[in-house]
Image (cartoon, rainbow, N blue to C red):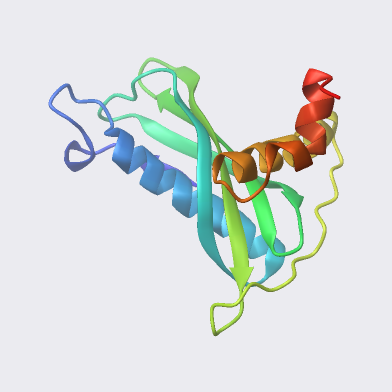
Length: 159
């Protein structure tokens, strides 16, 4: 997804507002999840949002979103954001995040989604880390006991 940063999108320093960036990220991630599942999707969580560099007025913003792993009805989506200053010819990665979406039926009930199959080395690395990130999200949300988070225990070699 590509957007141009216009005056209405910026703060008083002429930088893209963080809330507007998160809005764009949510849309790009939702499209990726919807295309993967062919279902209606709703945002379940957002984590690991990083704001590395300011994005200036007039920049072209490109968001790349991909489903990293699918569970029963949920999908983790990774997003990279690039800002390009066309006149100067510079392009830099400015943001990154993980979103979780749940596929739902017409009544809003969770519905199963197809498996995500990683192909490249980068996709495999994101896929393999997705279960740890999911367990951490569930523990932090109080929906999983830390003692049941097997992937987190293995990460810290806790017995």
